[in-house]
Length: 509
Image (spheres, rainbow, N blue to C red):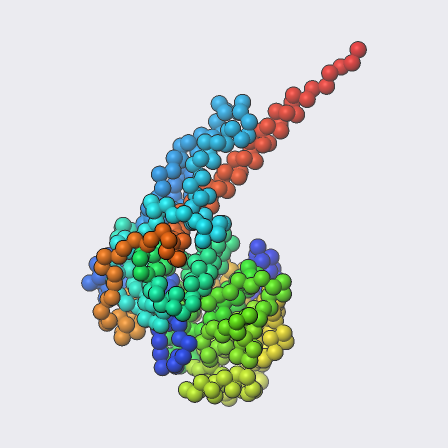
């Protein structure tokens, strides 16, 4: 038996359109990791030699001890001036005077929107630290949804031919659908995760760049060559219980990570779960996330706004528009049930029948999930707990601490949570890797590319002028700022020591 969830609690707290999605379908999301040679003509070549590569092209700046990406445009920061700030020649100065030269080197990162600790709406963009559409070679269309498209792209200056997935949104559509705030929230969440990368969740696709033109927004993610979980459920019909348990554990761990940071995901479905080349899942598409403010994690939308995909909406959303952390646990139950049976509970082509089932009908199980073995009893108990119609009685509940009950359920007794947190559990299934795109829908891959040919720059007064992000500069800025804080502490300790030495007692006569 693996290690229990209790030992991990502290660490955690520190789609393409388809016939099964007749309404509320969101943009296809196909992000993750993978690598390929640079020529588009070689997209159909053997991918096996690239499987062991990570999603980053890493090199180390040894003067600063900061990891950077060789594909990124690095700033002209002077490492020598930073490393020399603690030289003995400056010890006669005060702490503030001694750190002035150092602080001037990091000030650009503090002022940059990629520092991620600021509110991005008031950020000014340093164009030397951003990328634009001309930096990427667009290779294939991977998905096409109601809000935009997803392309397979290569960064032109990356010598290894690194692949990424680029989401493209039309500003006019975002504004017309009233989704400007959601777009901003999605970027803010990814910026926050990048800032705290050491303690981030390994099952969330990384955002590397964001930028915009006069008419469109772009987000560039790691590319998951394994494709959507929805694709594999359709290919296999049913997922074996051991594999479904591992997927469910990765999803539950990720939801717990988000909930403890005040984030409700609100759009969990197989289309938003994609497989990396190594077989692990990545959660993608944070466009419907909500950062809650209520102390117990339970809020009711003031405008009655209902978001998500019908088959995975919880009873409280359909009934009264209420949103809480518990809606994610309901959706986990729906996804797990679909993995094991091929369809979500109460599925029908008639949307009214689906809604009626979610609101009123009891959960039932097929015969192959109904035997009396301990494994099946634990599975049914887990699903019944997640798919309890009352959110406050549901497994996981409405509180951030409710994740404890989910992760410690007997269904997960064989999961070693420390190993899972370190991404050290080898999935029993690895997706095919014959080509970079073999796990994606051919109807999209064969479509003609519709790309901006002469993109104009975003205007300063544009509503989306804040929409820029560079993960590599964010990480550099974060590490430099930590080095700055450490240097300040060292200087203060030196000053204190000298002050203590000067306080020599004068003998009385």
